[in-house]
Image (cartoon, rainbow, N blue to C red; front, top):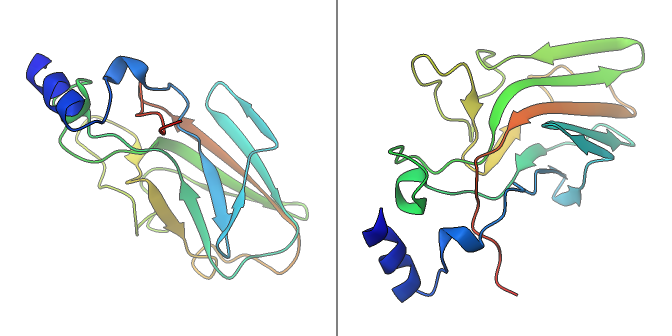
Length: 152
């Protein structure tokens, strides 16, 4: 792993140790960033005033094999345990196996039980069968130990 750190330093990417444990998970609703109203222990809650035409989960990313975090060569954002969308009195839950989690989500690795994003993962409102109006989105996600921090 030392070779990767040396290559990152030469490329001006900084050391993994200068990274952040915060994946900076947020939503993109019709292209606008929406930060979480609540964020603790991997639970992120968001409020949207109306159903967006396009909805994405977005976060920092890292390739664990390059970042010295393990052998995985995929570019990973966050690992999804569950996404719950509440609208009116109804709550719809989407687990890692749900086909609604497709574009921007990696296939589930054997024995992993998480659905990792690639950094930007699309949640198709039509596939999620959302009604018009206000909605709350709760994302239960696992973060990696370190993500490259943006330059200051």
